[in-house]
Image (tube, rainbow over all chains, first blue to last red; front, side, top):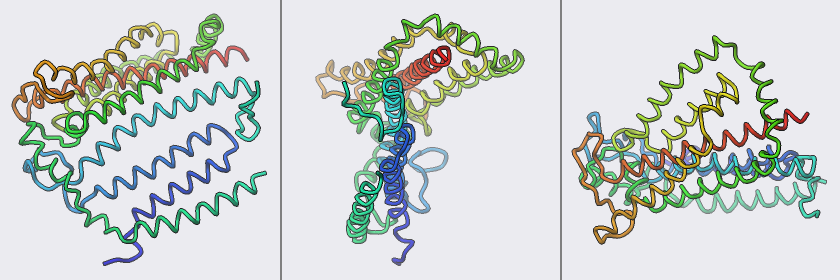
Length: 119
Length: 250
């Protein structure tokens, strides 16, 4: 039966995306900006997990009494998410390294007062 | 100064919400989505690959090529971070070591340090367990690799940077990371010997529920674990060096 809660998972993903984007738009510090980006990315995690979930079904690990080939939750989206969580951490590290360099060079980490194009 | 930007954001956000609702309302409740591909994988994993973890089967076999791409994103971002942070590091070696020595005095007491070090071995064992059992239970190279990297972090927490640096040789970890990244490709190319496409699972599949099951899946998981753990330790190295050098300059 469709009601407001039917799409709660989708709505959560949209909310995370928007609140992260708001953080990026209004950011006053580059570290805050990097973390806002991770919030945006978290919205894809929520969306995929919601899509892959099957109520009452087990995880796709066919051991300990779960018959091989039995119905289980979606393993494809889980595989996508678990690689991405690890890769995201290193990408954030790269962004933070760039932040460190910008702070060194410009003396500030406020994206509004960093003029990247100066010589 | 923020005002025009905020107006633009709210206009865009309204548009996004409208399109999102418009796009998702006709979709079914997540409960009713039937992903045929996922069903096929759940049905076939055990029969075709002799392994019990369908997620690892997707990661390291059925969609192994995608994971290769992901792994090289990881490799390149670690490389980029190292390049960005290392630019001045060599020149300021003296400052770094002074700061490292001083920060050591501020760190844990000897008794605490010893206890923290005692956690390194269990962490290593747990990490290796997670890496090697990816084909049987939840786990694999990505998750286990991160656990292994925390073993390095804990050495720093307990004993400070000088000991951290003494115990973990930077060049050795670089080699391990390269081995992990290259190993994935090499295992994929193994299939060429049998005139099969890249990343075909050509090794014997072994007995189900055993560590050797799954053919190349376990090996690729191991290579990934090596790359992820070495990559994270290198990041740790770079950021610690940067932070300590900066502290030493002040």
